Length: 469
Image (tube, rainbow, N blue to C red):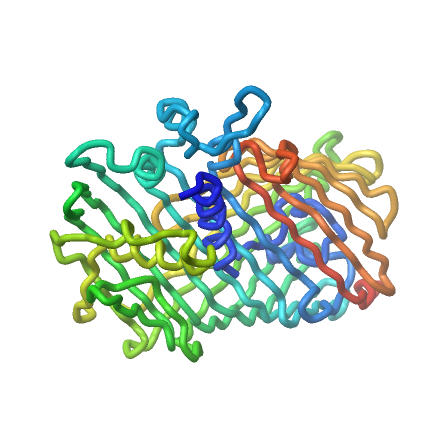
């Protein structure tokens, strides 16, 4: 088997997992952008400068990929040539020294089907949007890559896989938001909330807590501790010829259940007549507090069944298949490693969404033409919590044009972000930006360091600002 084929499989593995997802919120770099039409996605108390109608499909479109793997983990320059990690001239020790202890790949995307917002009077702003949201979290066991490099090095050869998991959520939501300026009672105070109706489409959670693999020239034996749950109409785990469950398949996918959610936010701007303090803005919000429930008929619960003899991957020959078919077979066999068996439903068919917390402080200067801000962000995922700190500089030379740059740290990687907005009160509004920008790439446009990037853009029609007093 050619080394290049092995490498293409690894790249295709990352790409396929990333491409399988459709959830990102608005750009965190736009949290302090006064004209941003979608800033109330981060904090429902924040009111944009004017109303809008999003153009369906492209009013708000975003995707992101977040991994601690990059080309530097798999490509090795040697005497003027570039070798893959599977090349025999690349020592296994060199490859393993670059491999992170807990490789992961997360991907997310969201798209608005319908969105609009408008002012009613001077102090009230209403918004409504329908969107499709999803999220994929994948933990890749380090020994998977070790096996790809070393193979069967002895008779027998032992490997232990820990915390190999795939977690995917897909749902749609319809959100009604209301923001209120309470300056008539407390000057500088804004509050807001969003009520969300959720439509459950899919949830897949497969986790191999531990798999002990023993490879010999005669057979492969596996002892597993694994759990899984598959939720959704038309989503089932089929079995292969060895009566082992393989990766989920979709047939006539539809609505699997319903749920509800809420966003809450507050913002306060100092206006006390105190120099160097007036204008300072403090804000806080929590979003995506919600619960989804699937009908029990659309829930399949799985668990592992102990030890078994495994004879799967050794039969895969990439040259005999097209790449996609070969990789699909490999994914089937990786799921089969879990040795899943269907059991009666013991857990509930309800689960929570992943809440997000935002804490911000912003200070404007130069007659509000510029500002600097700091935003703390935390997302409470099912298995762990993400935390990030973003420092932002914003330039607003005129009412319809704004740019910003930001720097994020603590979470995936230290990275530069940017934002460009053109937001006249009449006509078309446009924005594009990224919280993480890949700056170091190979000539083949592969990220050299950790693959962390996202992009969001949108086009809408302006509806004008609030009514004057």
